[in-house]
Every structure is written in structure tokens, then in C-alpha cells.
Length: 135
Image (cartoon, rainbow, N blue to C red):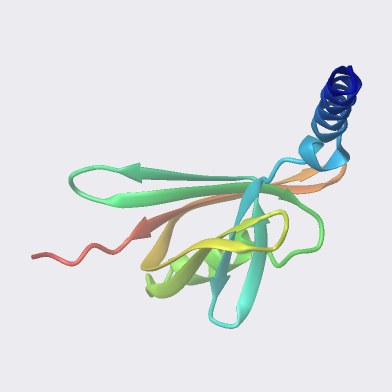
């Protein structure tokens, strides 16, 4: 007879712990990633979108974002487009917890760029061509 109450207590304790674990605030947080780029010593900040376009002839990356205070990649692209100077650009993917998940470095040059004024800051789009050495 003493065995049945202990079994009930174990079952109740298990059920309560399961409810506590599944409703824990820690399970409600998801890890998200974002992308940023660096050129030289300048961190151009986080981009809302980084789309890679690969074709047989070239590789391009389209960067877009809304921003307020970060350095403008648009200005860098506009200033470097006329000289067609290539730059080593570092693409960094990070989590919202600050953990770096991926780092890529490519020689790039700007091919398209635009910036628009919005109510909450600016919206910029920059397309970079990635230099692919011939084999």
C-alpha cells in the first residue's frame, strides 16, 4: 500500500516538472542571425538582407537595410565606383547573442547602389560584384 502513494507522488512531480520546463521563459527565446560587413577598419553595421547571386560568369551580393547612424555603405560604393578599385570585404554572420557563426572574406567592387530618405532614417541597397579569379 505504501508503494502506490510514492508512485503517485513521482507521477505528479514528473508532470509538474514537464509543465514547468515547457513553459519556462528560456524556451520562448529563439536565436536569430544577422549579417554585417567590414571594409578595412570600418564596421558598416548590420544589414537586413544579404542575398548571394551566383551565375557562371560572376558572383554578386545584394545588401540592403534601414539605418540611422551606421556608416553608409552607399557613400563607400559611390566613392569607390569611379576608380573601380577592388577591396577586401569581410562578411560576418552573428547571432543575436553575439556569437559569430560565419566569416567570409572576398575581393569586391560596387556595381549598383542607391539610398532613399525615410521617416525613420535611410534605406540603402548596394550590389557588390565578387572577384572570381580565372582558373
